[in-house]
Amino acid sequence: MQKGLEHEVGEASGWLMYLIGKEWGQADAEEFKVWFQEDYGLHFKDAALRFALETWWWPLTAQGWGKWEVDLSSIKEGFLFIDLFDSAVAKSLGDVGKPVCFLYAGLFAGFFSSFFERSLSSTEIQCYSMGNDFCRFLIGSEKRVKAAEFWLTSGATASDIEDRFQAIRSEAELSKIGN
Image (tube, rainbow, N blue to C red; front, side, top):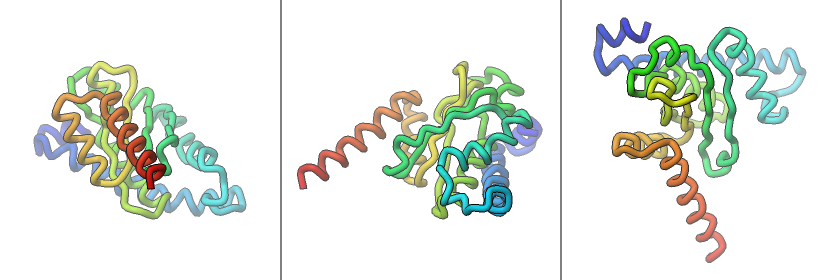
């Protein structure tokens, strides 16, 4: 689907796949909230966050969308990272030298926006289709995602971006101590 779309609309295909994924993620989150409450008898916000997230992702893993690891260590600062192993999109396209998992980025943006009830964006900062072992996504505010995308186009790696966000977090913590 992505190759066909790229053939028809060129570079806009990534943005379209992102929008499709975002709509899918938002709808899936709303259905998940209802299902989770019916099956577990509690609101997803009352459950352990990791349990709720794994409960949502497990059916997608079983359907072949890949396994994930969610890094919640920066959630209090308003962002998180997801490592995706065996991306169905990247595996099907192979090594093309650029990020290709726009559908996943949109899915994560839509799901987490609905889940946390705030507007979030997502971008892929590392991709299997670039020769990496797995894909890595940043989920956060649009401002944060735009900064990461700028750094990527300037030649930064995923670990460079993580280091920059960690430095910003450390500076914020230091300023709290100083006040």
